[in-house]
Amino acid sequence: MKHKKKIVLPLLISSSALVFSACGSNGANPAAEGGQKQTQEGGALTLWMFDTTDYIKPAAEAVAKEMNVKLNYEFINPETYKTKIKVAVAANELPDIFGQYNGRSERDLILNSKMAAPLNDALKSTGLESKFLDGRLIKEADGNIYSLPYRPEQSEVLVYNKKLMADLGLQPPKTWDELLNVIKAANAKNVIPIALGGKDRWPGDLLYNTLVLREDQEAYAKAQKGEGKFTDKPFVDAAEKVIQLAKEKAFQPGFLGNSDLEAREMFYSGKALMVMNGSWVFAKAIPALGDNLGYVKFPQTGAAKDPFLSNTGDRNNAPYGIFVNVQSKQQQKAKEFAIRYSLMINDELVKSGQPSFANTDVKPTQKVNEAYAQYLEDFKGYKFIQTYWYDTVAAAVGDEYRDLNQKLYTGTLSAADFTQKMEQIMRKK
Image (cartoon, rainbow, N blue to C red; front, side, top):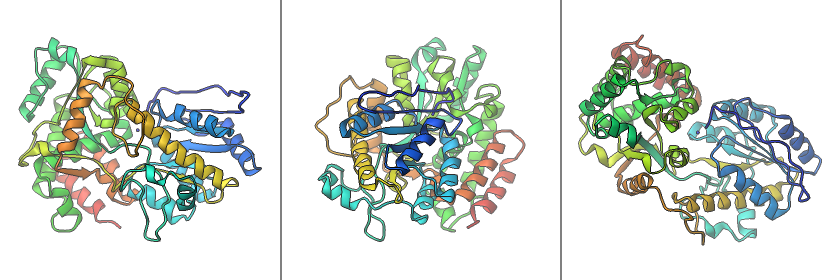
């Protein structure tokens, strides 16, 4: 999940015949499309991934070199990727290997299209199946494994700039009142309190998800099962808090026009005091801020008991996955690449001190950042992780809900109006 800034690598042709290309938010590029044609003719493998985290690309290059294969890859802004992968599925134009955007509906799109190749045979023939930790290779109802992991489990975090916080003479907030005080103090010093990428919709959605969780841990599950409604008090109270945050100028001016990547850059560059985002934010925040990076659990903003024992996030019930195109002309080679790629990514995670999804002899190559180490310890102690709402509903429902959620931040909807509309949307099939 992710930078607005375009990353365009030149086309490189070496003696090992490794060719790679990458793009930012503009979608397709000629090198990747050319690579797909070559693959269909028995040449290069093609790879699409929506993740732009630094280690994702070097891992692809390393596996290509290890297997001595020619590789064309394309790394795509996540919001663009969601559309691109849907079009590719419908047009039967998927690359050899491709990543899945997170969530049940995105996964179902691929599996229901019957365009994912079973990986059981390659996992056995390569002898690498045993490398993966229990539960990380997901067997579908037909007994087949269609995807491979490439991201650790994750949850919401509130990270802050220690120096800016100290300059304001404040401590990171642990309660709703403390959060409001920090926002007021930051605004008084012309410091952005919280950087938020409202344009992409999902950052505001995840914040609201967490605010509801802080009101009642069971609220969403009950409403989803029909044992409660999305107009119940926890949803209304959380919506009121979003409205209040907007009124208090908690976010940067024009935040509804800023992407998540732009918002995060404000934090990385020291222009914003805090950012609330998924734990994937550490990948860029650590090198940007180093020991100046601070982290706390999201404050106790509502009535929930033991609020710090739960969080919103993703565990194995809504995985990110790497798939192989069942129509790949080099299917076995693509399968082996995908397996080795997944394990290579795992090694990169371990090197940087992040959680792993497979066994490896690789050790951390650097001191684990203090803030990140505290997050890892906290993550182990969570009794409950509420899956991000979008990942539990059909994509059409999730997108309509996120459009509505974005309007909540504009101040044009009351909490009552918002929750009534949300009740209608969430009941759609």
